[in-house]
Length: 511
Image (cartoon, rainbow, N blue to C red; front, side):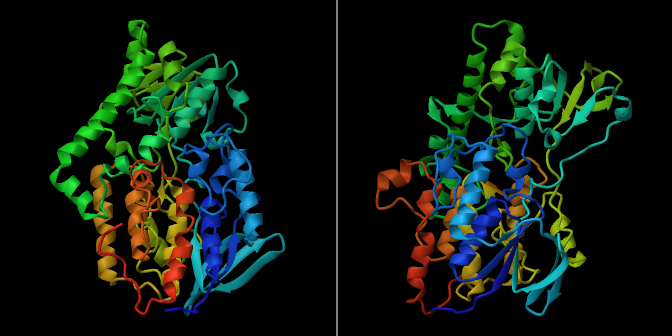
């Protein structure tokens, strides 16, 4: 069953997701144009704060068939990621148009008219399909306004405003928040500032770089451990039986992981005074680990807990209520004197100003962010899909497999279920996430640590084996999964196309 249906596809956003998706569409014979309003490719990496690093290791963050052409750091810097993405665009000759801002999408018969702006003025082009890949961390930061803020004698930033870490030099700094950027900011400030206060409503679990001496990616990226991950859907009968009938094993596994994390933090305080123990206790969560495994789950910087133990970071378990001339006030009445405040309160829910209002209402109504079938399409919006709204630990393969899934659909080789069935699947996942994952404005867009289950289901939809390390059973069970394990999925899918006489249908499992 070979389809010749090819489309002209516009990808909005030239971050890693847009580039990865465009590459797959192009390889399937579609004409692809990538639009981005910025001067640089890379999305969030092009606007990242200084010294930010990838939380994954480099082998888990690249196009599956294009390994890094140079050797980056184990956890690459933003500059190294941008260098890699430029190399990938050049290697695959992807048509990326920077400083091209998409203003509106006007619906046509089986197509979209895109109106965009560049240095030469306004332009309009017709595309048969549009893939939105604007990223849910690239746009605005959460900028809350607090009483008395206008009277503060110091300076107030979000992490996005910070272009040089020298602003912390010899300053009294207060960092507000407990996400990845807040932890990074507190650590950077402790290395340079005179005094650092870390303010947070509740501490979150941070993933240590090493677990029992092993880099965290070994235990967290192998099937023997990811099979233990509770999720909205499990792709095999054995996994379903484990989680439904033998959940005490799953619960015990995660209790053991929590114990390891706590003991490793407490070990940092060994031999120190009670004040150090109290500070470390203040940054340890009292809730379970699993609800914190969100899209924005953070890897602990190497020095964060050390700086807390040494008193270089003073934790404050409370909520910021107002500003004074000389600092900030917490709800419980405590005043913190500071010269500089970093409000690291997360990103805003994604918005789509270029879409018709009737579709914006469908996509922007949920406080959790975009809700999609297979984390790829909205059932009520024709000729439109999303790339990167399946954010997870193996993000690039998820985008690539998602793009291949979309190609199969566009080419008539994959038939979608009914509108009602897709909406039921979306509601099932939305309800599960609400019940089992702590809130964040992009909760609906996250696959996070459930990446193996998600990828397995999508790959099975395509009629390809999800077990990418077979026939080596030992490697399949215990080996660390990397992007390169998925490099042949497209080839395997295309190999079966010529002999297939009937269309594929998504398997009856929600994701």
